[in-house]
Structures are given as structure tokens and as C-alpha cells.
Length: 329
Image 1 (tube, one colour):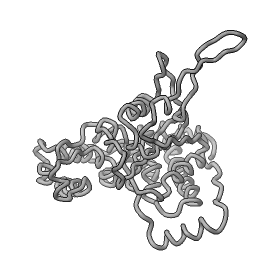
Image 2: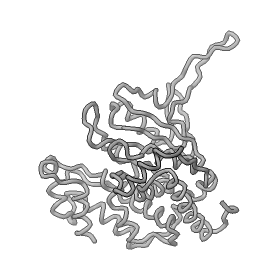
Image 3: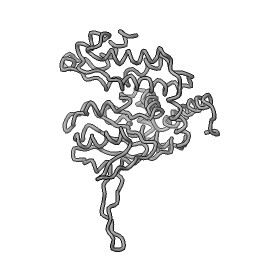
Image 4: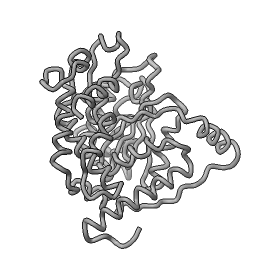
């Protein structure tokens, strides 16, 4: 990147250039998935965690590891299993002996990286999920009586397999709410799948060179909260979140019929923050209603708790949010 920008206008231009460079870098090894990459970059700029939902084999691990390489950040992967313990993630104190003296020394776990892939997060029991929750919320972990800070930046990209139920545990609502975005990773198009089949069976995978430094990323993430947002955009974000609550006067019939609990205030906060991040990555001077509308589904979908009737009638969170969009505008 160029010399450190000194004005917000320079920072805005740098954010847009950085987003373009990152898209191109990841595209050298990942075919398609443009929307997924866009949402990952938004979460990165907003310092938020992401829940990636999709069946196996859709390059979710490759997406996260490629992003880490393009940013020259450390990458850690944790495969969640039913027998995984909290210490297997956070680390533990071990007895260390030197020159006849014994002491406890903390051995960091795999969560001590900048970008952490929590693979199949719903396959581990609640106690281990809670350990990850503390790390995501507080960006620190506790081992014994000592608290250890995680590296900066620190973000979790977790994956969840939506079709596998055997040996899985529900992801608690409190943990789901800690994710800034829930992103659906869908099957590639036919042309993209042909390209994947050719590229992965013909030659060694391309090597991604870093296109941003940690300082570049830090400047952008510090800048995002300062981006202006229109009053109309804030009002729309709040209106969207409130309309997902069955007791709200503005809730459409689909919400009253199929939703047990709607998005809380963190939902509207997240809508405003992600709208600012999207504006920055697109080089826009302020976040507006278009940014809020574009992020309605990935920001609020995982914050809804649907009723049994919704399951029986085949109604999804996306169906409910579509009704909210029609009702609010």
C-alpha cells in the first residue's frame, strides 16, 4: 500500500483499493463465491465474527485461509468434535521444570491466531462452545486463574453444516448473536464448477502474496466507525430490527405467526456498523439505506428464533425477513 493516509478522504480511498486488491487475491485460488467474499470483507472491516453455513466441499476453509494469506495474518483451524474440551481450544497450564525448579507455564491453544476457522462449530458440546464465546466477546481467554489476551486482530470464522444432525449440538442463541454476520455458502454455478474441476486437477494451486499489512488493516478498521451514516439509514436499521419482534406494532403477520423471539438491539447496531463497512469498501462517503437493505438478511437471519409452526409450514428465516422487507421498505 502507499504511504499512510492522513485524511478521512485518503482512508476511504485506501479502503476501496484494499477491498479490490483482496477480492482479486482471493479469486486467484477461489472460484466464484463473490457474495461470500464480499460479506467476509465487510465483517473483517467491522472487526466482527462470521458464521459460514453450507454443506461440505464448498471451499469454506480455503476462503478463510486465503484471506489470512492475503492479509499476512496468522491462521488457525480448530476441528470441532463431540469430545473437544475447552482447553483444547484455549490452551492450558503445563508443569515446566528447569534447573530443578518447577513452575506452571501457559501453553496457548489454536485460538491464539489472528483469523481462526472454527470448523463445524455445532459438533462440540455447550461447555466448549462457551469457551469460544468468551474469546469472541472479550477477545481473551481464562486458563486457571490467569487471563490471556488474544492477538490483534482476532476474528472467528465458524462453519456449520446445515444438513448433518447426527452428533451435533444446537448453537445457543447467545452464541449466535455474537456473530456479526451469518453467510450462506451455496453451490457454484455450472460454469464455476467446471472451472473448479479443471483448476484443481491440472496444476498446483496458486500462491497468494500479501496485498495488505497489519497496519493497513488497522487503519481501515479504525476508520470504519467514523464513517457518517444518514439518519434515514439508522431509522431503517432500527425499524428492520424492531419489525422482527412479534410484540412490535410494526411486525408483519409472518413475524407474529412464525417468530418466537426477534432480533435485539445488537441487531440494529450490527446493521448500522456493517452498512458503514460496506460503504467504506465501496468507496462511499457515507452509509445510506441501500447499504442497510443489502445487509438485512446476513445481519439479522441468525438472530431470529422461529416457532415450531414455522418448521411445520416450511417457513425459513429468509421468508420472514422478506416479509419484514416488504412491510418496512
